[in-house]
Amino acid sequence: MASMKLIVPLLCRYISIALSLFQSLILCLFDNFDYPILIKLADAFLSLYFITFCDLRPITVDLNDGETTVHFWVSGHRRNNRPDLVMLHGYGGNSKWQFIHQVSDLSKSFNLFIPDLVFFGNSHSRNTERTVEFQARSVVGGLKRLGCSEGGLAVYSISYGGFVAYRIAKIWPEMIDRLVIVSSGVGFTQQQKMTEMKKHGGDVSEILVPRSPRDLRMLVRISMNTGIAFIDWVPDFILSQFIAVMYETNRKELVELAKNLLEREEDAEFYAISQKTLIIWGDKDEVFPLEHGRRLHRHLPNSSIEILKDIGHGVNIEAPTTLNNLITSFVLDVS
Image 1: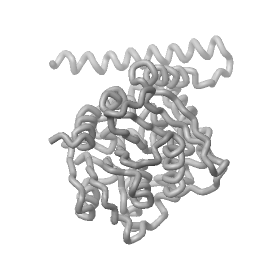
Image 2: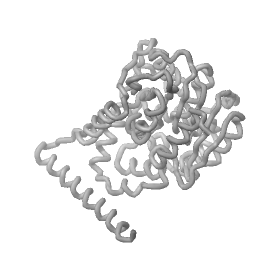
Image 3: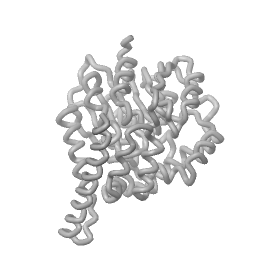
């Protein structure tokens, strides 16, 4: 075991060196070459993985507002004997990168509907609204266009996606039967938001939309409690490519979405939903500390809470198997 602890960091260092040499080779072959080829390739392989191993298909839906397009990954074969599960991501890339560790398992039990929220991934709009309600309307509009107008959906949401899912459950209660909220500051007061912002320093909306490798490393460290050592070994040029692919195209809109979320005051009746709800929280969450998960649980009489030991904000990355099992048991009502 001791020898493995020595070998792993050494291996990471060699991989880092090899990748840096690869970058140098690329720069020699293509002068001023800054196209994010590695992340583009990785993103393409993720699409292939979703299609080949998870039976998912990409679908782009134009909404009735004439301004908004929502991109979904949906199950290629929608089986009548499986519940429909909508998966709503948070900040940190598109739906593929956030749910890579979950879609294979969950696709075996559910018909999946996985949208890129607007201004993430391949979803976009000419609408100037940046509210959670706008995101909720866009998701619901897309789901209805895909034939999910009869309701009875289960929704799994994490972080920013939790705000969207909660708003859907309140405005369109007939659509959602069960709700899973993971690591989401639903119901934060303005004062609570300001308190959490001060802990991390700077403009939190800018932290959520990193500009540099240093910013991205900070975001990972804030979001995760375990398995974060890898981020120190990833060369800057790869992190820069990730930032270019995930954030640059819609940087302005993503920052505006974050600012709107952080600056708005939730209404006093925001907790008045009736759906059966499962709340999942890591006890080492530094983005939305556990006390807020317990508070949300107290305000939801039809809810239960699961607390994951030694897990941070990024439950989907740190404990995907446990998370998948909890979602599956809850939605399928398996005791």
